[in-house]
Amino acid sequence: MGIMKNLDLNPKSKLSRGGQMAMMVLNTLRENKRGMIVTLGEVLGLDIPELFQVDAKVTIDRNIVTFQGKVEGTNSMKLYIRPTSSGISSGERLIDIELDKNGNFNHVIKDLESGSYEYRFEGNNEKN
Image (cartoon, rainbow, N blue to C red; front, side, top):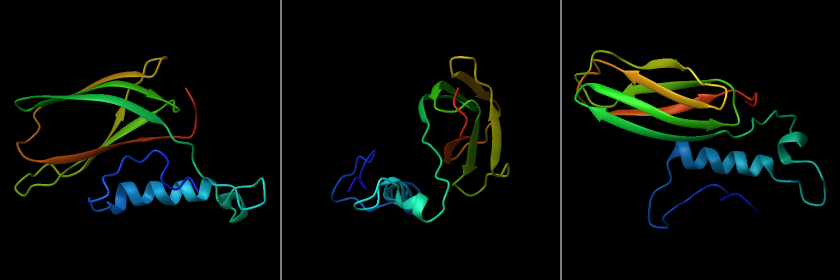
């Protein structure tokens, strides 16, 4: 079974529920059911989205963060960013990222409060 496809795991590390386990579930739903040409997701009546690939470089300069890179497999993208350290008043954000016709992007966030954050990119099922 290709349940571990697209995963680079250290055998001694703990699985993250939001990332690695979610990918394992998607991989399982994309697998053909034994002896059939349909996937498990199709058998269950689920519409499984295609993966999109993001190659991004994040640069931090004081309170300015720049996300720059290229995306493939979607024609629109959002950046979800949220603080993980206490004392940050800005809260979470969902930001539309402008893509050029080749999927390149360069997005700058100014005046970001000092602290720790986590982020992820979200796309749609439409290819660019």
